[in-house]
Length: 256
Ligand SMILES: [Zn+2]
Figure 1 (spheres, rainbow, N blue to C red):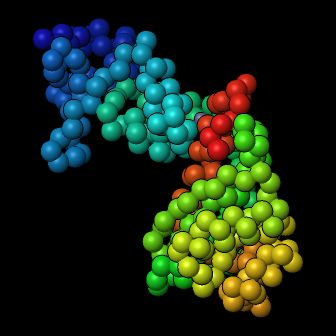
Figure 2: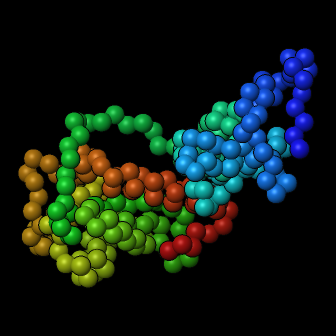
Figure 3: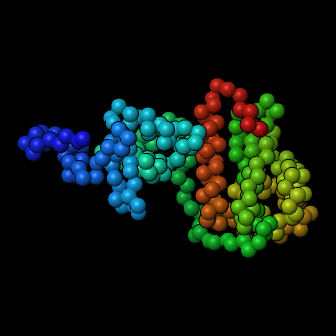
């Protein structure tokens, strides 16, 4: 049974209390827990009303854990509002993410686009693969410091390989021995690792494998202009790796 304040007492209450009073018909008890009936979904969803003393714990669970993945403000808020409710939840979520130490350490600087974005569509598997390198990370017990990420643009198939360094020879050998030997030769390779991969050796590899290179766009510029979902996915993976690595500071990185 919910006891509602009389109007006179309500005038002295907090903005939160006044807000919940205005929609008191949506407040219910379910299994002894106070819930809010969210009517914007079909069927209506029951959201757990979080007491002030538990807000921080809920925020941490929806943002800071490995499963939560330190996603951004909007995604963290979306996750919260799928199950919980409290007055000022959006603002609390924004502040929590903005002040998250791990997120701030790994925040990517905003880079200005170098040119107009173009769309590159792959029509079949292995038509275009994207490669990128995460790192340098903390050295693993096997002496690896970087991770080579290879994504097939059409199938979205992703593979990761541990690397001791990110020079062109190491990348080319790993790519041919582990990926190209299994899936065949791609029609085109994209990468934004211009300084490391656009060297002579990598150019030679493309030449040996007869992978055509666009004369107007080097492999480095193609990915930057490609936009699309692959880059978004890749950015998420990149963030996730670095955030997890940051959380493990003080212990050896043994993922690879
Ligand atoms: Zn964070």
